[in-house]
Image 1: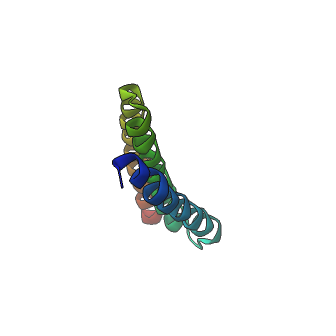
Image 2: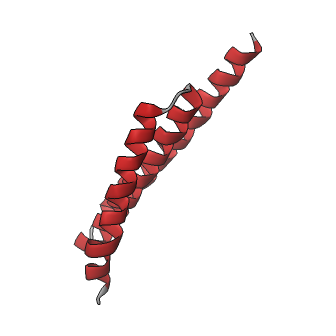
Length: 90
């Protein structure tokens, strides 16, 4: 089994199944913190999909896109966490 077959037949289906489960948790999540964590995890899974396609199609610009998406996701998670903490204090 080559690397490309491994990526197509094992890694991508696992990422798709995890994305479906994460979306279900996002919809079902009872609290806003659950939804924030699931959205952050969904973005991380999307970064994994972008990385797999970057390897398959040999496009290094996709990795730059994944890096920018990771930075935006991190900053948004920190900002929402700060907002929740500030809201809890009042």
